[in-house]
Length: 288
Image (spheres, one colour):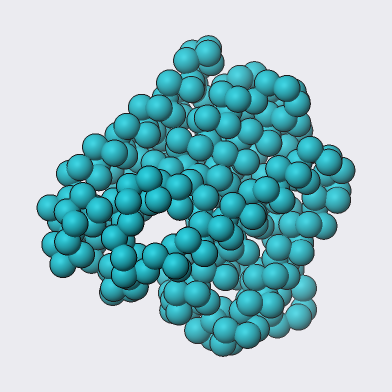
């Protein structure tokens, strides 16, 4: 069974919840305006929606109901994620995203930056609908960390960072939004008991990015990290950007460490189909 087939099976466990998120996101974008139509097509293209999938699995594993507020919050996370991807494509001069031409390739950088800002504005609008000062603060801190991660990555281009700097950047760019997605979802029901959720989201997010970094090197993509001067775990271990393959096995060991830490955060969750789906997802990220 392929990665896509295995993931689709996990996705199906909370598909009804995720479809409601997608519907909310697309309802913000569907409009006769040309750039909004482009955004609608971009958001309607195939996507893993992994933050929403993971959040709903975590909620249901803990016997927490998926309410309208939960759907709204995950739509906010989805909008922030995709708005940041539009900006990332501008920074990286990317031409393809989800098998489609990027906005910056079609419209240029100026309009794409504005389009990314527009998507973030939709997220802010939904934050007002959520009407939670705690979540507003959480999202503000999360976006600040994401920006800090991007700045740190840019400032260290073509330099091999220390492992600590790489992991901090990885947490800021990727882990922090997973952490916010899951901990914020739990906060909706219980504002004082979300540490396990935050730890799980953080460790899963870092693992997810480490895996992505490894795949980027293994697949030798035309627009690869190394060609752009972004040196990740494999290069740090090899200490040679021209031969990162010698560091891949150690990078996979690092990935496994974060997967194990994420799984430890599930110890207090009762055994059920949702917890099983999360563990299957951890194994999928670790080994596929």
